[in-house]
Image (cartoon, helix red, strand yellow):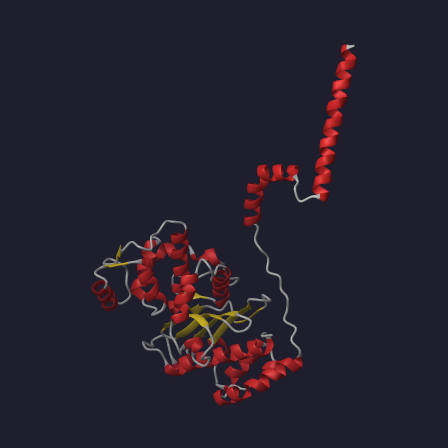
Length: 353
């Protein structure tokens, strides 16, 4: 009798288990309310979310397929401006590299004097020329430097309100350093450092930012946070050499984290109006961080065309400048703006809808 009772109880338990599993299965296939899946989510959900966040997102390249007639239409619309600048090329039938080379051929610029990397933010298409060639970085290092500081503020390790002593900050020019110490009473906030390092590209506030991270020597070891070049120089060397292949990755990281770096984008939008990438493109929204020193005239830009794009444009010796130059070469600066126009016009013809 006891055996029979045990058998009956066991059978009832088994039947109840089957009924429960069936109910769960039926709910999972016929209802949005799934208690079993909700229970699983409660147990494993957090770990699953963490794993999902850790997985890198791969870029999906969807090439722009623009008709030849549409390209020619833009060529016709922009022909008057191209001709007024003396920058009329067959944008509709040439690659970006070939258009830039055509410009350099016309103006007697050696191919070794220009390097660029371009990325379409919608299709993720990239084009480049001399992108692993060593180029002098100049003040363009201030862009990833500011990003590193924002990262620390975002983590709660640095305050935007605190005033930091700058009297003993490393400097390149003592006169500039002394002026900042006097103007700010020996202490600056991070927002002040950001304004003067990005909008005006001053060195003293940039070194003051670096001090917040442990000094420039430490900063050089941190630049790979935003990518590494496939060339010999991976980020920015201590000799101030870099590649456009590195900086296009910096720009891409900046673009993909616009909310976090909103203030950097705002300030670079204010920098150097009418110069560098903005020189021949009036009315177009452009966030740019230029860099000049000696023979180098460079610019990293986020360009808000109908289809936005990113570009790192680095040059050497334009206008006859040399490593001994101590002033911005006006001819070279204008040629940077011409190169910017050529790249932008190619984009307008081939990449805008």
